[in-house]
Image (cartoon, rainbow, N blue to C red; front, side, top):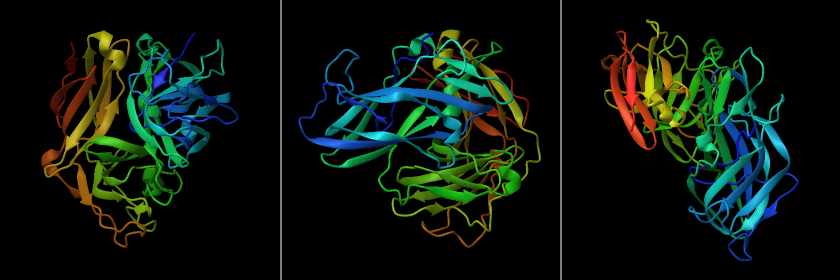
Length: 401
C-alpha cells in the first residue's frame, strides 16, 4: 500500500538534507552555491506512545508553480531513509537531518517524501496508541498527489542557512472512528534559526501539574506557533525554535483553568524566561468539570481536509486557541472537552536573559467563563459557532459547499 508519495510543506521554507547522500537534479541559480542545514522537531501528540515517519528525500524548487515533471528541481536523498519517532523530539529537542549544498537563490516550494509502508510491522509510517500496538498510517487519496504550500527562504551564496521542520504529530494523526485505522494528515511548519543564542521561551510549572502532561504553547493572534509538554519530573518547558516576535503563552492542564501570559518577547540574543525555576507556575484548580462539546462537519467528503478548534477571547484581549479537535475522516465527527471556569491572564514582566524575581499571578476574567468560538475550516472556507459551555451545548453542525 502506498502510504505517502508527496507532501508539500512549509510556512517559511526548508529542505531536509541527506546524511550520507544526495545531490542536485537540474538545480537552478548558476554556479553560486549556498548550504542548507536542517533539523526536525515536534509538538506534543495526543494519546500516542509513538508517531513514526520515515523520510526518504526532499525536492525543492525556486518556482512555487513547478510541477512534478518540470525541470529545475534540486533533490536530496537520505540514504538509508531515516525513521524518526516524532514523540522523542518535544520540549526543545531537535534531531539533525544533515546538510547539503544547493544553488544560491530564493526557494518557494518544498516537497517532503516519505517511504511507502511495508505489509507488516515495523511500518515506515505508523502510530502506537497509548497502551496499544503499532498501526500503519494511511493517507487519504486526496493527498496522494501532494499538499502544495508556497514557501520563501533565501539561500545566500557561500553562507549556511539553518532551518527546523516542526512536525505537529497531535494534529497530523487522525483516528478513523472505531475502524482501528489512522490517517496521516501532515501539519508541518518550518522555522529559520537565525541564532542558537535565543529563539526560546523557557519556564517551569509545578511538578504536580507537569505530571498531568499539560499543554504549553506560544500563540500569535490565536494561532499556535510552537507547543510542547513540560518535563514530567522537573516541570521545565522549552519552546524552541520560535521566530522573533511577541506572543501569548497559553497553559492548559487537566482539572485546571486556562492561563495566559501576554506580551512574551522572543529575541535572537537570549532565552526568554517567563518565570523563575524557584517560583513555578501553578494554574488555578478548576471548580467545575470540563464540558463535552462536539458535532459533525459535512458533507463527509470534506471531512478528510477539515479542521476544528476552540477559541476563547478575553474581555480586553487576546484571543487564544484552547483546544483543537481532529475530524473523523469517515464520519465528520469531532469532540472537545473545554474548561468551564473563567480563564486567567497576566502580562509578561521580565527581561530576556534573566529569570523574573516575582511569582506569576494570574487574574480571572469572569465575563468570559465558558464562552468559546468553535471554528471549522475546510477548502479555504471558515465556519464559526459561538457557544456557552457553562450549560449543555447541543451538537454543532458545520456544512461546507
